[in-house]
Image (cartoon, rainbow, N blue to C red; front, side, top):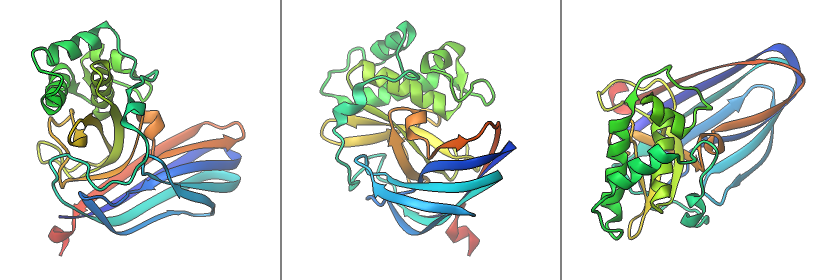
Length: 274
């Protein structure tokens, strides 16, 4: 299918900032499951710096906004043709070894509860049955954490989310990654867009899911929040060791200011608009 995405991010500062520098990972890469037909990233008044394809296969660009600036708006818009590859990431150019994604981060450090969840989920499954083990881990996370907005914060750790039993896609993804790494399966955090969730409801935010490395298949996506593997309803942006590492926008400001961030995502099926 062809999906059109419009993603607007707005930063407002209580005091004008002297300068703002950001790193953008806002352009999806082509692979077997998606082909970018058109895409643009705009930020009024920004000076575009270097751009490159990272070792993980993500397009990255640096931008700078010279102040004084009270607010900035980043508009992402484009169309991507997608197809269902059963979650398997094929044809994606990258150089980072899967083993690099075995190390935990502060947000994905497993505690006793996560270790127990992981060991119980894969109990009785042979190590060679990598895909079965990955599905079992994703199902266990979905069973353990109810999808409820407003119960967690961006800084919530995997251990805290599991203990609370409620969370959003970031929390499901962190817990799944933490559990997978504990049983020696490389796992990474993926950011992107979702046309509709498991209930067929339009998704008005950016989305996140995990990719687990399965011997013989490579990287396979698992959306534990929706209890499925990514299909043609998904557009993949980039990846990292956790939500912070994979963030589509990261930046620094010069000056003392508090920011107010709002974001809106609209994903539409091009065929339904014609």
